[in-house]
Amino acid sequence: MKIAVTGATGFIGRHIVAELERHSISPTLICLPSQDLPAAFASHTVVHTDLTAVPVRIFDLISQPDVLIHLAWGGLPNYKSLHHFEEELPAQYRFLKSLIESGLKNLLVTGTCFEYGMQSGPLSEYSGTRPDIAYGFAKDTLRRQLEFLQLVRPFNQTWARLFYLYGEGQAENSLLAQLKKAVERGDRVFNMSGGEQLRDYMPVADVAKHLVSLAMTNSDNGVVNVCSGKPISVRKLVERWIKENNWSIDLHLGYYPYPEHEPMAFWGDRTKLDRCLQRHEQ
Image (tube, rainbow, N blue to C red):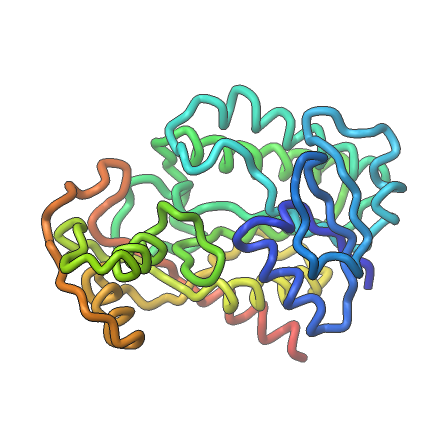
């Protein structure tokens, strides 16, 4: 199976490449011209392109893959920036449409739990979407555009709606990365919110494993929550990280306010994910 990956140098992308290698697949990596590539990517085919100026024969340039795992998205972590729907959204759609019109049959795109908006409790793919920030709106709109495109250019789509991730290579402003830095500096306390908000967290290696499995089903899975299905308070999660790593640091709870764009308690229903994964194993 030939697989191409966009956003391969990002947090999730590097784990996706490693997971594909475990399946003895050498993916074609689509990267920005300015990006520095890890030494580990040397054995893979790399195609440099910008989504805003895609070559006409891009499908041929990336060796006509059977599947595209599309992770790339610019403008993060500024979730409220208008860039997401003013610039990123049209560029993303043009890029994906050009590949589909050229012959791409299977597409996996990563979405976001922010598409659900301020809904609380367990969220399934049937909960409906109510995005209230620019990033969530743009992602949800891209999904809808691709669904309309399917009506005139049939292809298999998996919209992998991600919840919260953590692990090696995460952005410096992420919770785990900030905690590690505080420990390395020798800080006595770690400033955070009250920590009572319930979230759905998964290790990025597990997320990569699920995404690769979904991509390899060659099926029209539609929207699939990629999540643990198990809510945990942010406070308990941080306390668990401290205990697992034997770190010595106290928590300063309530230092930061709770985010305005997130409900206090929400997590994913992974019933459909488990069903798709079971089908892949068979």
